[in-house]
Image (cartoon, rainbow, N blue to C red):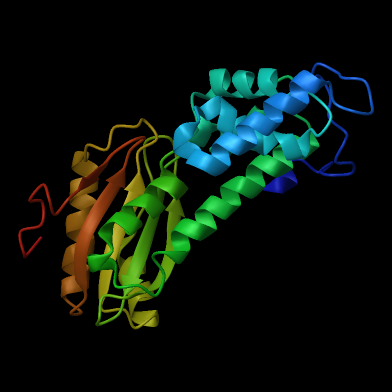
Length: 255
């Protein structure tokens, strides 16, 4: 998640929004009111699938910019970052660089991002993860797919393969994250975990494992096996897909 400490002036005035095509105070022009009404009705009738990314983004921006036409800003954000998900997950500094983005817009976007992360996480925690694999993949993509640097996280499971903890173990650069097998196993013992699922992302978008990824996974698996801890899988999260070490046959039982 982005750190709001990056923008210490947040959020003195919810109407303190600059650089958006202004509309005179008072009532919104009828064309803007009608457009907003149509978007809300279409969303309520068909959900997000009924709307392109820029219109869904408009709905989010309505609350942040209540008295201006937000369509130009929505399109500018999509043009800059690529899609709805990338807009929400973009760093504060980059968002602030888009003309029309003020404090209120930053807050609204990051609230939606935080809500998405919390919702997807709730579908994984305290659940039997092996029978809820799609929810796990959704959670990993929501939280990691659009990060600009590598992150290594671990899901710790009990004897029933229920997730008891989800922790970030390390942050790295755009193409490397330092991971120490001893620390991974030590934390598993502290949590009394019986199994692990390893997860990290590739900011390049390509989830193909590197030689270093394979070697690191083997080291962790060996260390865990020595203490009767199972490593179920290692997932690498790309921009729109993921790679499972187990599905690729990279676990051979002895790592």
